Amino acid sequence: MSAPVALTLVIPLRAKAGMSPPDFYQYWLNAHVTLPPRFPGISSIWLHVVSFDHQLWPRLPGVRHRPEPEDEFHGVPEATFPTMTDLEATLDHPGVVLFKPPELQYQAALEVVVADERALTRFAASPAFTGTAGGLAAHCEGVHAARVDRCIATKDRGAITLAGVRGVAVADLIRRLGADSQRDAAVSALFLPDLAGSR
Image 1 (cartoon, one colour):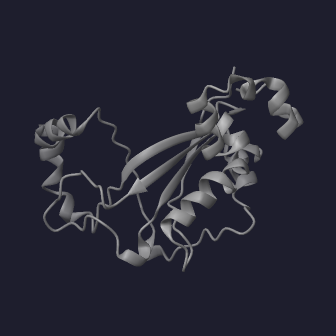
Image 2: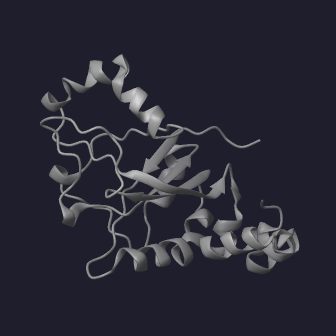
């Protein structure tokens, strides 16, 4: 049985200067993707591929709906940890700059999941949203509701997934072709010996 989740870390990522979003996704989902699942202390990791061009969230008067172009992010990893000590093993990540000036830092994150656009329309018309939206401009400068175009699990309750072992493009190809032999524990063990029992 996996340890209970005590903390969740969400970090908006952006392509470095001069890198195109397609190159960012190729690197993030197929080169970097296999590293974080191996960091000690992480229980689960989801990678959210996001878009501001495909936003569906209702616009609110007086509240910015997307960041300035130079501050837009392209992906959001979401990792869970059983304890604060587990998190502190992970924050010292080589080659990644985690600092943002306080005025550019997000002070809250909210994840809203709906079945389809009609469900979002119903939610936007409901008292749960309309009763809150009116006062939002007094407390929020912006609500940057990036749409999640895809969510990929690379570690799930302590077990590294196929995407976490092989990368997203290879995992997609294995699934599409039904290459089930590639999921065998013996094959996973070729990539990392202690993964023999991983899903």
